[in-house]
Image 1 (tube, rainbow, N blue to C red):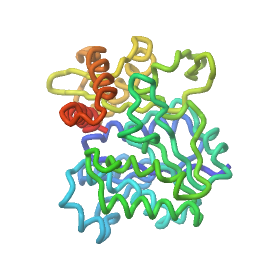
Image 2: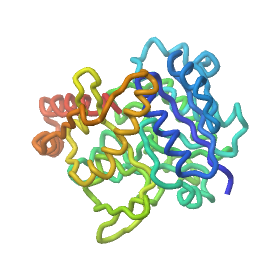
Image 3: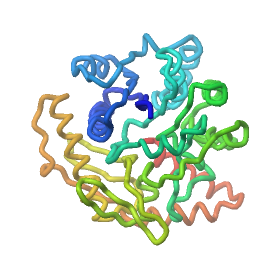
Length: 336
Protein backbone atom coordinates (compact mmCIF):
# COMPACT_ATOMS: atom_id res chain seq x y z
CA UNK A 1 0.00 0.00 0.00
CA UNK A 2 1.04 3.65 -0.43
CA UNK A 3 2.67 5.45 2.47
CA UNK A 4 -0.04 7.23 4.48
CA UNK A 5 -0.28 11.00 4.46
CA UNK A 6 -1.44 12.63 7.68
CA UNK A 7 -2.15 16.21 8.65
CA UNK A 8 -2.64 17.89 12.01
CA UNK A 9 -2.80 21.38 13.47
CA UNK A 10 -1.68 22.84 16.79
CA UNK A 11 -0.05 25.85 18.40
CA UNK A 12 2.72 26.16 21.00
CA UNK A 13 0.35 25.14 23.83
CA UNK A 14 0.10 21.66 22.27
CA UNK A 15 3.67 21.57 20.98
CA UNK A 16 4.86 18.72 23.22
CA UNK A 17 1.78 16.70 22.26
CA UNK A 18 2.46 17.31 18.58
CA UNK A 19 6.03 16.14 19.00
CA UNK A 20 4.86 13.03 20.86
CA UNK A 21 2.41 12.29 18.04
CA UNK A 22 5.18 12.60 15.45
CA UNK A 23 7.53 10.38 17.48
CA UNK A 24 4.84 7.72 17.88
CA UNK A 25 4.25 7.67 14.11
CA UNK A 26 8.00 7.26 13.54
CA UNK A 27 8.06 4.33 15.96
CA UNK A 28 5.09 2.51 14.40
CA UNK A 29 5.17 3.28 10.66
CA UNK A 30 7.80 2.28 8.12
CA UNK A 31 6.98 5.32 6.06
CA UNK A 32 4.56 8.25 6.28
CA UNK A 33 4.40 12.03 5.91
CA UNK A 34 2.85 14.32 8.51
CA UNK A 35 1.77 17.78 7.33
CA UNK A 36 1.88 19.97 10.43
CA UNK A 37 -0.02 23.26 10.40
CA UNK A 38 1.68 25.47 13.00
CA UNK A 39 -0.85 27.97 14.32
CA UNK A 40 1.61 30.38 15.93
CA UNK A 41 5.15 31.57 15.25
CA UNK A 42 6.67 29.88 18.30
CA UNK A 43 5.52 26.42 17.26
CA UNK A 44 6.54 27.01 13.62
CA UNK A 45 10.03 28.20 14.60
CA UNK A 46 10.58 25.26 16.95
CA UNK A 47 9.34 22.65 14.48
CA UNK A 48 11.55 24.03 11.71
CA UNK A 49 14.56 23.95 14.04
CA UNK A 50 13.86 20.28 14.82
CA UNK A 51 14.29 19.36 11.11
CA UNK A 52 11.74 16.53 11.21
CA UNK A 53 12.53 14.17 8.32
CA UNK A 54 8.97 12.93 7.84
CA UNK A 55 7.10 16.20 8.39
CA UNK A 56 6.22 19.26 6.33
CA UNK A 57 5.70 22.42 8.37
CA UNK A 58 3.08 24.91 7.14
CA UNK A 59 2.54 28.31 8.72
CA UNK A 60 -0.62 30.38 8.88
CA UNK A 61 0.61 32.85 6.26
CA UNK A 62 0.90 30.04 3.73
CA UNK A 63 -2.38 28.36 4.67
CA UNK A 64 -5.01 30.98 5.49
CA UNK A 65 -7.19 32.15 2.60
CA UNK A 66 -9.70 35.00 2.25
CA UNK A 67 -12.66 32.96 3.46
CA UNK A 68 -10.90 31.87 6.65
CA UNK A 69 -9.51 35.34 7.36
CA UNK A 70 -12.97 36.83 6.87
CA UNK A 71 -14.51 34.83 9.72
CA UNK A 72 -11.42 34.54 11.96
CA UNK A 73 -12.36 37.46 14.22
CA UNK A 74 -15.84 35.99 14.80
CA UNK A 75 -14.47 32.83 16.47
CA UNK A 76 -12.56 32.15 19.66
CA UNK A 77 -9.11 30.62 19.23
CA UNK A 78 -10.45 27.10 19.81
CA UNK A 79 -13.43 27.70 17.51
CA UNK A 80 -11.15 28.95 14.75
CA UNK A 81 -9.02 25.82 15.09
CA UNK A 82 -12.18 23.70 14.78
CA UNK A 83 -13.21 25.76 11.75
CA UNK A 84 -9.88 25.07 10.06
CA UNK A 85 -9.95 21.27 10.37
CA UNK A 86 -11.44 20.47 6.93
CA UNK A 87 -9.40 23.28 5.37
CA UNK A 88 -6.05 21.82 6.45
CA UNK A 89 -7.02 18.47 4.93
CA UNK A 90 -8.12 20.12 1.69
CA UNK A 91 -4.96 22.28 1.56
CA UNK A 92 -2.72 19.24 2.09
CA UNK A 93 -4.38 17.23 -0.67
CA UNK A 94 -4.47 20.05 -3.22
CA UNK A 95 -1.13 21.73 -2.46
CA UNK A 96 0.87 18.50 -2.43
CA UNK A 97 -1.28 16.50 -4.88
CA UNK A 98 -1.82 13.68 -2.39
CA UNK A 99 -3.81 10.54 -3.31
CA UNK A 100 -5.40 10.70 0.15
CA UNK A 101 -4.95 12.41 3.50
CA UNK A 102 -6.03 11.61 7.06
CA UNK A 103 -6.52 14.27 9.69
CA UNK A 104 -5.17 13.47 13.19
CA UNK A 105 -5.86 15.31 16.42
CA UNK A 106 -2.57 16.43 17.98
CA UNK A 107 -3.27 14.63 21.27
CA UNK A 108 -3.17 11.15 19.73
CA UNK A 109 -0.35 8.69 20.41
CA UNK A 110 0.19 5.64 18.20
CA UNK A 111 1.04 2.22 19.62
CA UNK A 112 0.82 0.27 16.39
CA UNK A 113 0.71 0.86 12.66
CA UNK A 114 -2.51 2.16 11.11
CA UNK A 115 -2.01 0.04 7.96
CA UNK A 116 -4.86 -2.38 8.89
CA UNK A 117 -7.24 0.60 8.95
CA UNK A 118 -6.12 1.78 5.52
CA UNK A 119 -6.60 -1.74 4.17
CA UNK A 120 -10.15 -1.58 5.53
CA UNK A 121 -10.60 1.78 3.79
CA UNK A 122 -9.03 0.77 0.47
CA UNK A 123 -12.30 0.66 -1.48
CA UNK A 124 -13.85 3.75 0.18
CA UNK A 125 -13.50 7.47 -0.46
CA UNK A 126 -14.16 8.69 3.10
CA UNK A 127 -13.43 7.02 6.43
CA UNK A 128 -14.92 8.07 9.78
CA UNK A 129 -13.97 6.90 13.26
CA UNK A 130 -16.92 6.37 15.64
CA UNK A 131 -16.62 7.47 19.26
CA UNK A 132 -17.67 3.97 20.40
CA UNK A 133 -18.91 5.49 23.65
CA UNK A 134 -19.20 3.46 26.82
CA UNK A 135 -22.82 3.53 27.99
CA UNK A 136 -22.14 5.94 30.87
CA UNK A 137 -20.61 8.53 28.54
CA UNK A 138 -22.80 8.29 25.46
CA UNK A 139 -22.96 11.85 24.15
CA UNK A 140 -23.66 10.98 20.53
CA UNK A 141 -26.85 13.05 20.57
CA UNK A 142 -24.91 16.26 21.20
CA UNK A 143 -21.31 15.53 20.21
CA UNK A 144 -22.03 13.17 17.34
CA UNK A 145 -21.52 9.54 16.46
CA UNK A 146 -18.09 10.27 14.97
CA UNK A 147 -14.95 11.87 16.36
CA UNK A 148 -12.82 14.25 14.32
CA UNK A 149 -9.72 12.54 15.76
CA UNK A 150 -9.09 10.42 12.60
CA UNK A 151 -10.86 11.37 9.35
CA UNK A 152 -9.78 9.96 5.97
CA UNK A 153 -10.40 11.50 2.54
CA UNK A 154 -9.37 10.16 -0.85
CA UNK A 155 -8.46 12.56 -3.64
CA UNK A 156 -11.42 11.56 -5.80
CA UNK A 157 -14.66 13.33 -6.66
CA UNK A 158 -16.49 11.26 -4.02
CA UNK A 159 -13.82 12.11 -1.47
CA UNK A 160 -13.38 15.79 -2.19
CA UNK A 161 -17.08 16.61 -2.46
CA UNK A 162 -17.89 15.90 1.22
CA UNK A 163 -14.63 17.56 2.26
CA UNK A 164 -15.59 20.75 0.42
CA UNK A 165 -19.10 20.61 1.92
CA UNK A 166 -17.63 20.22 5.42
CA UNK A 167 -15.32 23.18 4.90
CA UNK A 168 -18.21 25.35 3.66
CA UNK A 169 -20.39 24.43 6.64
CA UNK A 170 -17.60 25.09 9.15
CA UNK A 171 -17.01 28.54 7.65
CA UNK A 172 -20.73 29.28 7.98
CA UNK A 173 -21.01 27.99 11.58
CA UNK A 174 -18.41 26.46 13.89
CA UNK A 175 -18.73 27.33 17.56
CA UNK A 176 -17.99 25.56 20.85
CA UNK A 177 -21.64 25.16 21.73
CA UNK A 178 -24.58 22.91 20.96
CA UNK A 179 -27.00 24.63 18.63
CA UNK A 180 -29.60 23.35 16.13
CA UNK A 181 -28.08 19.89 16.00
CA UNK A 182 -24.54 21.21 15.53
CA UNK A 183 -21.45 21.21 17.72
CA UNK A 184 -18.16 22.69 16.51
CA UNK A 185 -16.73 20.90 13.48
CA UNK A 186 -17.73 17.47 14.73
CA UNK A 187 -21.48 17.00 14.41
CA UNK A 188 -21.30 17.66 10.65
CA UNK A 189 -19.70 14.24 10.23
CA UNK A 190 -23.01 12.58 11.12
CA UNK A 191 -24.42 13.88 7.83
CA UNK A 192 -21.71 12.30 5.65
CA UNK A 193 -23.29 8.82 5.27
CA UNK A 194 -26.65 10.48 4.54
CA UNK A 195 -25.52 13.06 1.98
CA UNK A 196 -22.63 11.29 0.27
CA UNK A 197 -21.68 7.94 -1.24
CA UNK A 198 -18.91 5.52 -0.37
CA UNK A 199 -18.46 6.72 3.23
CA UNK A 200 -17.25 4.06 5.66
CA UNK A 201 -17.55 3.63 9.43
CA UNK A 202 -14.16 2.28 10.50
CA UNK A 203 -14.73 -1.04 12.27
CA UNK A 204 -11.29 -1.55 13.78
CA UNK A 205 -11.71 -0.97 17.53
CA UNK A 206 -8.00 -0.23 17.95
CA UNK A 207 -8.37 3.33 16.69
CA UNK A 208 -9.93 5.92 18.91
CA UNK A 209 -9.31 4.19 22.21
CA UNK A 210 -10.13 7.09 24.50
CA UNK A 211 -11.34 8.10 27.98
CA UNK A 212 -14.97 7.80 26.86
CA UNK A 213 -14.71 4.13 25.79
CA UNK A 214 -11.87 2.44 27.73
CA UNK A 215 -14.51 1.13 30.15
CA UNK A 216 -15.58 -1.27 27.38
CA UNK A 217 -12.28 -3.17 27.41
CA UNK A 218 -9.57 -4.94 29.32
CA UNK A 219 -5.99 -4.61 28.14
CA UNK A 220 -2.86 -6.72 27.93
CA UNK A 221 0.65 -6.05 26.67
CA UNK A 222 3.08 -8.38 24.90
CA UNK A 223 6.28 -7.42 23.07
CA UNK A 224 5.36 -3.72 23.25
CA UNK A 225 1.98 -4.36 21.58
CA UNK A 226 -1.11 -3.44 23.58
CA UNK A 227 -4.21 -5.56 22.98
CA UNK A 228 -7.77 -4.60 23.91
CA UNK A 229 -10.36 -7.29 24.46
CA UNK A 230 -13.77 -8.13 25.86
CA UNK A 231 -16.23 -10.97 25.31
CA UNK A 232 -16.74 -9.98 21.67
CA UNK A 233 -13.47 -8.64 20.28
CA UNK A 234 -9.71 -8.79 20.56
CA UNK A 235 -7.63 -6.27 18.62
CA UNK A 236 -4.32 -4.43 18.72
CA UNK A 237 -4.50 -0.84 20.02
CA UNK A 238 -3.47 1.49 17.20
CA UNK A 239 -3.75 4.81 19.01
CA UNK A 240 -5.06 6.37 22.21
CA UNK A 241 -6.75 9.76 22.27
CA UNK A 242 -5.61 11.75 25.32
CA UNK A 243 -8.49 14.19 25.36
CA UNK A 244 -8.91 16.25 28.55
CA UNK A 245 -5.42 15.49 29.84
CA UNK A 246 -4.22 18.65 31.59
CA UNK A 247 -0.70 19.32 32.87
CA UNK A 248 -0.19 22.35 35.10
CA UNK A 249 3.57 22.96 35.14
CA UNK A 250 3.36 25.70 37.75
CA UNK A 251 1.28 23.69 40.24
CA UNK A 252 2.96 20.41 39.18
CA UNK A 253 -0.36 18.61 38.80
CA UNK A 254 -1.67 16.30 36.09
CA UNK A 255 -5.43 15.93 35.62
CA UNK A 256 -6.38 12.82 33.67
CA UNK A 257 -9.91 13.96 32.89
CA UNK A 258 -12.76 16.06 34.12
CA UNK A 259 -15.16 13.22 34.73
CA UNK A 260 -14.11 9.95 33.09
CA UNK A 261 -13.63 6.77 35.12
CA UNK A 262 -10.01 5.82 34.38
CA UNK A 263 -8.72 2.61 35.95
CA UNK A 264 -5.31 2.17 37.55
CA UNK A 265 -4.46 -0.31 34.78
CA UNK A 266 -5.10 2.32 32.11
CA UNK A 267 -3.11 4.93 34.05
CA UNK A 268 -0.13 2.58 34.25
CA UNK A 269 -0.38 1.24 30.70
CA UNK A 270 -1.20 4.43 28.81
CA UNK A 271 -0.98 7.62 30.81
CA UNK A 272 2.29 7.23 32.69
CA UNK A 273 4.43 6.44 29.60
CA UNK A 274 2.69 9.17 27.60
CA UNK A 275 3.21 11.78 30.31
CA UNK A 276 6.88 10.82 30.40
CA UNK A 277 7.12 11.59 26.67
CA UNK A 278 5.34 14.92 27.10
CA UNK A 279 7.74 15.90 29.87
CA UNK A 280 10.65 14.81 27.69
CA UNK A 281 9.58 17.16 24.93
CA UNK A 282 8.70 19.95 27.35
CA UNK A 283 12.27 19.75 28.62
CA UNK A 284 13.53 20.21 25.07
CA UNK A 285 11.09 23.05 24.34
CA UNK A 286 11.64 24.85 27.66
CA UNK A 287 15.24 23.75 28.28
CA UNK A 288 14.28 22.78 31.81
CA UNK A 289 14.40 19.61 33.90
CA UNK A 290 10.82 18.54 34.58
CA UNK A 291 10.71 15.15 36.31
CA UNK A 292 7.52 13.08 36.42
CA UNK A 293 7.84 12.11 40.14
CA UNK A 294 7.48 15.82 40.93
CA UNK A 295 3.95 15.84 39.50
CA UNK A 296 0.82 14.80 41.33
CA UNK A 297 -1.62 12.81 39.19
CA UNK A 298 -5.27 13.60 39.89
CA UNK A 299 -8.10 11.28 38.85
CA UNK A 300 -11.63 12.58 38.93
CA UNK A 301 -14.35 10.94 41.02
CA UNK A 302 -17.29 8.98 39.64
CA UNK A 303 -19.77 11.42 41.19
CA UNK A 304 -19.58 13.84 38.26
CA UNK A 305 -20.08 10.92 35.87
CA UNK A 306 -23.22 9.90 37.70
CA UNK A 307 -24.62 13.44 37.88
CA UNK A 308 -23.88 14.07 34.21
CA UNK A 309 -25.51 10.84 32.99
CA UNK A 310 -28.59 11.44 35.17
CA UNK A 311 -28.99 14.97 33.81
CA UNK A 312 -28.76 13.63 30.26
CA UNK A 313 -31.62 11.23 30.93
CA UNK A 314 -33.76 13.84 32.73
CA UNK A 315 -33.74 16.61 30.11
CA UNK A 316 -37.00 15.73 28.30
CA UNK A 317 -37.76 19.35 27.44
CA UNK A 318 -36.90 20.74 30.87
CA UNK A 319 -35.14 24.02 30.06
CA UNK A 320 -33.51 24.41 33.49
CA UNK A 321 -31.97 20.92 33.37
CA UNK A 322 -31.00 21.48 29.73
CA UNK A 323 -29.07 24.63 30.72
CA UNK A 324 -27.33 22.82 33.57
CA UNK A 325 -26.45 19.91 31.29
CA UNK A 326 -25.14 22.26 28.61
CA UNK A 327 -23.01 24.10 31.17
CA UNK A 328 -21.38 20.85 32.27
CA UNK A 329 -20.99 19.81 28.64
CA UNK A 330 -19.21 23.07 27.79
CA UNK A 331 -16.72 22.48 30.60
CA UNK A 332 -16.05 19.02 29.21
CA UNK A 333 -15.77 20.00 25.56
CA UNK A 334 -13.76 23.20 26.08
CA UNK A 335 -10.56 21.17 26.04
CA UNK A 336 -11.44 19.09 23.00
